[in-house]
Image 1 (spheres, one colour):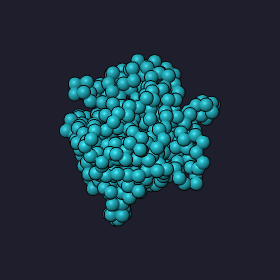
Image 2 (image 1 turned 90 degrees about the vertical axis):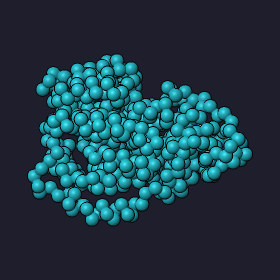
Image 3 (image 1 turned 30 degrees about the vertical axis):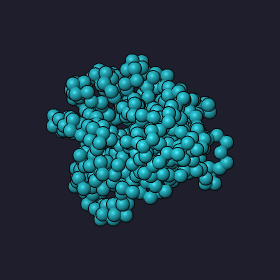
Image 4 (image 1 turned 135 degrees about the vertical axis):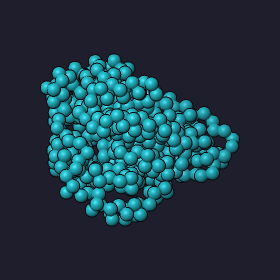
Length: 459
């Protein structure tokens, strides 16, 4: 049961009172999510100090007090795999298969990216995520010093990696390492870092092995795309006699703390390898994109759970997903798993909430800091308003949160004890200013008549 010790006598930094609080009664049991009615959160020094009754909270002095009647407090959502700057490319490459999406639009356009484009796209993405109740995101892209600066300024938490391809030569891998070492622990500890090879089809086996060595040497995790779809697995088997997961294993990546993006191409022969990692390997699932690209499979969440592999929720970038809505990812994950398994009992609403909170925190290496509202955890949480007609009446609160609530129902977003949005008002970002400048830059950013591209997708 979530501890709820008495708060100290000194004034709290923040007290949120009168809400219902989502609690994890058993962290490893996805069915043991509970809700404490008429409760309060007490925040001190950027951490949850106590979870108490609303009546007790009236006696706690506070610098800031939020009355949250009719609202649910839950751990902030975590976007376990995205490309925040690609918010600038939202809607640019529509109704295309993945190869044409990369080769004809996205990779040509990405050769135009400047640091300013990345800054504006990231600021726009962060504004969207804060408004949607996301308190942490895992990013894997270019110009990551710029992304880190935006994160530091807007108050979010982030797990960042500078992507590299083997076509860059040794300097790409070296730049990824340099970024990870320089920025880990930045923004008062809100930034964690990873090495970020792009994928087994754009990074050689030798470079993957070198990355695994660097990860072990420096105590760094790795974030990579792998087995994104079944075609990639089939192509890898034809070329190398190995699945993408087996390629990662041969290179030593499964011996590191590894976050795999997508994994819809994970097959049965991969599962013993993933199980052997003892939970050090995690997978991020971004279901909207799989529907968009008409992929025949989705992330095998049930099989991965049985193998002890954490599965976090994600959106991918807005260029492939059109939104950074993790609420939608939670809903779609539950529904697509029911369809894929042919079993309406899987994935339940409580299981989906477990993936959105505890498992997502584990996936990005923050399982001991966030994902649970309990004393000693970082004060990353959101308040969700359930008074709207689309969320009433409430017969099953977990089902209401997963299948009825929307990102727009998030009223307040708090990260590290700092209020980033209150009553739907963003406090750290100016959307109109961002959109105004970004719109002026779009003609140059989106030009494709230069004949260049970042890479070529041929898998």
